[in-house]
Amino acid sequence: MIKVNFLILAVLLIAGKPLLAQTQVPENTSSPIFYKDKNVGIGVSEINAQLVVGSEFGALVSGSSGGCGVFGSNLAVYQRGMNHNQLFTPYNHDNSYGYSGMVCQWGSIYFHAQSGNTTANKVVSAPRMFIHNSGNIGIGTISPDYKLDVNGTIRTRELKVDMQGADFVFEDDYNLRSLNDLEEFIHSNKHLPDVAPAKEMQENGVNQSEMNQKLLQKIEELTLYILKQEKRINQLEQVLIKNHNE
Image (cartoon, rainbow, N blue to C red):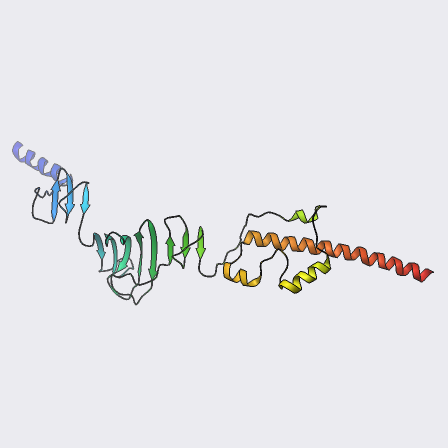
């Protein structure tokens, strides 16, 4: 009776604890899975980390049967030679659900995204965004010349630009052109002084901070012209009044 009770107790103890299983592949085996010094290699025999995966395409986690509302989805981390390294790629085996991913090349990162009608397992879209190894970011371009270079239209609720004012126009030593000189300059050059011509703006673009300062400078110059004309008008009115009274 004691033996029976002990056997029942042992069975209950075993049933009440989780069962642990461990499978080890012998070292230097011909199997695609290699085990060495508690490290595991899949498809590669040179193991220098806890888990090393090596194959023609690297590591691929496939969910081609679909799940969580995503069909034909996959996650890949693989390499395509020295100059074209695929870093992270969620994509589709199917050719109708699109593609997205990013590619590393010479320290720069290309971001791809494309909707349906793609080629299965292929990057067929032009990069949507690009981070150059200099730190410049391009959207719609892979040749960013600035910290943020956008080939397209930008919509924003607010834009703040650091700039200098143009209050130097109101200093006593500021050389304000006469209206005659201004007219001659405009007639000869077809643009305002200190402002780039239209052709140059079209070819090179404009620096928003500098342009804002130039526009403010011209507004302040225009204000001075108006004040001068107001003084001249008042003087002429006084002369007319005096002549009328005489």
